[in-house]
Image (cartoon, rainbow, N blue to C red; front, side, top):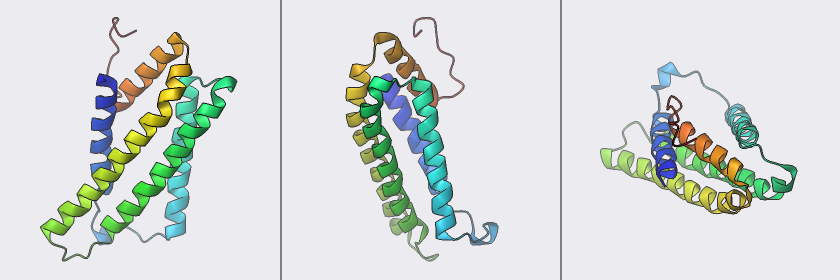
Length: 153
């Protein structure tokens, strides 16, 4: 439970940083297709890295496919909400801003729940040593500098 809470908390911080829009003068305009391609590459890289870190076996690939698809779908859903937030007019009210941020936070919370649901069967199918590895990966993901104590190993 502590692991999931850490991942959720750190993900919320990451989303809040990602959701902040820099001033228009500080950002060179990029085409939506180019931005989507970059995002897709980041998502693919993240999925591959997680696959490798978790040491997914050939027998786990079917369960992993559900996890990967959920991660893709969540990224797409979050993109839509962020696009909506980023398209707020410059004269948007504080209430508009708060509501758009709430939409981002809700989309993120929904994606974490969906991921937890599809990751559960994969986790249950893992041998104990791989479960410990998954526990460490998810704990450290939320806090990259965290040292794993001897009790957690």
